[in-house]
Amino acid sequence: MTDNKIKIPQIIALILQGLALAAAVLCVLSQQSIVAGMSSIQYSGPAIVPVTLYLIGIGFLIQLIFLFITLKYEGRNRRVIAGIVAALYCLFNMSTQWLAMLSNMVMARQGQERLVANGLVTSAISNSTGPFLVIASALFFITIGRYGISKNPDEEMYE
Image 1 (cartoon, rainbow, N blue to C red):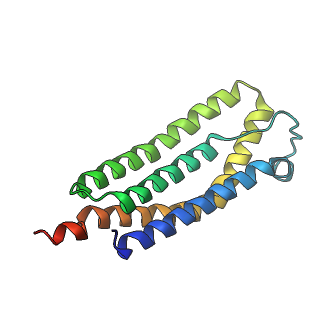
Image 2 (cartoon, helix red, strand yellow; image 1 turned 30 degrees about the vertical axis):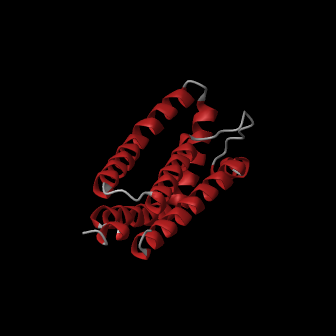
């Protein structure tokens, strides 16, 4: 059983991460109007799915998995699990800049119009998801900290 001090911020973080994912999907679906409205380029090539969308989705999955862990795990190694999840989340977030740079290098080889369209869609995703992701990350780390220092209530009965 998990305390509400752990569950509530985690659920709010997951909802905010989900809203960011939904906003990113909407940006990808409306990329024609984004590109036309923000530049003079008339991009008519194949649909662009920026790497940012996948990264937001992976962050959502990490938070969802951690939610299931916090709800189901009844062992004594909460601090170790919290440390592993925090390290995984930090490494993932640090790698996003490198992955975005690699994506730009690939897009640059596919032509100027595709590179510009990718940049505009990525920028729209970043602008629309930034506030959600910042708050979701803060709440996620609060949850990790609380989970790491807490004890399993079932375990306290036997001490």
